[in-house]
Picture 1 (spheres, rainbow, N blue to C red):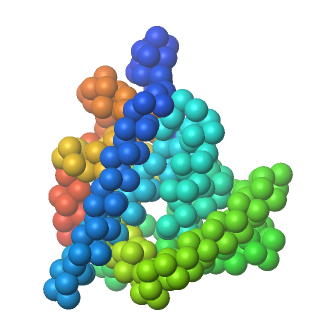
Picture 2 (picture 1 turned 180 degrees about the vertical axis):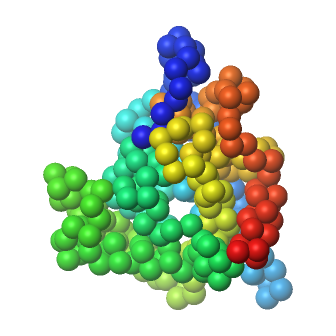
Length: 300
């Protein structure tokens, strides 16, 4: 687990920063859904020349649902435990990332951050060449993984995923099967009510276009950070603009989150203010990081 050096935050400071809020969660979720609906309206109103950009915009807002998935998994999006579970499960469906499966995966990531043998995020090694970088970014490995895990769930065997406790496997299997039925049911209903093309332009196409943007975002969180338990060096915080922070529920304050995962999204900016002078891996902008990483890959 990422470890915070002593006295970074006092007990009183951490308690104050860890206050959860149904109101903040509902407002951020409402805004996110409004962005998705607005992008969906643009897709519906698009002509031949504007359809692809509109689908990309819809795909980015859909892929960004990863932020509330992540936040609800930590039970910090809302004060209500049930609200976290319901919102998280539904938000994960469009990307086929089952919420209960992701909970087991992500908790293992927090317990073993940057441990090459135990961190499930390192099952797929960071890109070491331009070809590997492009392969990761186009997101085909992501979709392959999602389909294989669904296959395992329908077979009733999650033993290929060692981070899933045996006692949790039956519940996760049921959840993944229910998600499959739900997603296919929604796709079928949209075909009946709108047309055969509806899942293609409102879901499948946008997801294929939007997930690469999310891959770019997520690649910055730990790549080139230390492979040890030092929470100040094994995770990166990236400074970015207000629009990205809004869409991604302040996930760019990633070191702060790893040091203190009890702090909810709406308090991470305050946590950043308290911790910034101690952060060892602070990046100014996502595109700057990727430009530097690509230069490094080209030199290797």
